[in-house]
Image 1 (cartoon, helix red, strand yellow):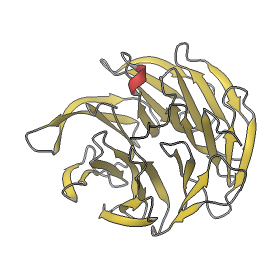
Image 2 (spheres, helix red, strand yellow; image 1 turned 120 degrees about the vertical axis):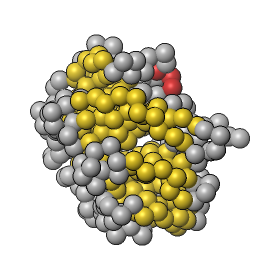
Image 3 (cartoon, one colour; image 1 turned 180 degrees about the vertical axis):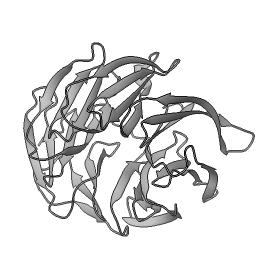
Image 4 (tube, helix red, strand yellow; image 1 turned 90 degrees about the horizontal axis):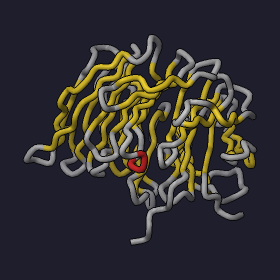
Length: 316
């Protein structure tokens, strides 16, 4: 099989992972995932593997293969894995789980290198662009910064007591972080780097984005510049696109019939893929806010999506 230039995958409560041709909308590969639901999908930086975060395992599947068996499995979480991602060179993977831990995994050794205790179910973890700090959000409303150099928690924030932090996102240049919660609120901080390596949070904005839950928030990528957007996906069936300059509402993406669980920007920020409980994923044009493709094939809620349409990192 030749490596497709655009990798688009979705996962559903129907216990399948599907790969799609982004332009035609054709599903060209289905992987059965009988072990559990899949909570999160992430594609490795080299586009070769897809990580599926389940309960309690993380499985890696070869993208460029017809086999339905995972290439690797990472096992030491004891509950739903809600977050997964990769260091920029793909040397290590990070994860967060409802077992209350954040873990770092060596991709070569396939084992857990480090573990951090959040003391509450972890819903979301993001890697700071400096590649040396992980930021986690949990069910009790705590946001913690894990300094990988010092190997400790360097910062702790509670934007709203006892209100679950559902999703975190960091601007590509490390200038902003946004936390979205179960009350439909986004908290925005400017990230300041002091004399030390530690990142400091300066409150910038509080955005009442939705009346329902925000299930995913996402800042636009580098190649979207000079435009900077925040996408918020909600239980109110919509995704809203906010201009980061002033946090004004740019457009509302309307079309899904149920909760919108996940979203991901194309590498240039011109398109957005969304996943919804209405069983579909959709491709949206950011220029006019219209859905230009509907990916239909799942039989139950589609709860996560992954897209990699950028170049692979050049070999050093």
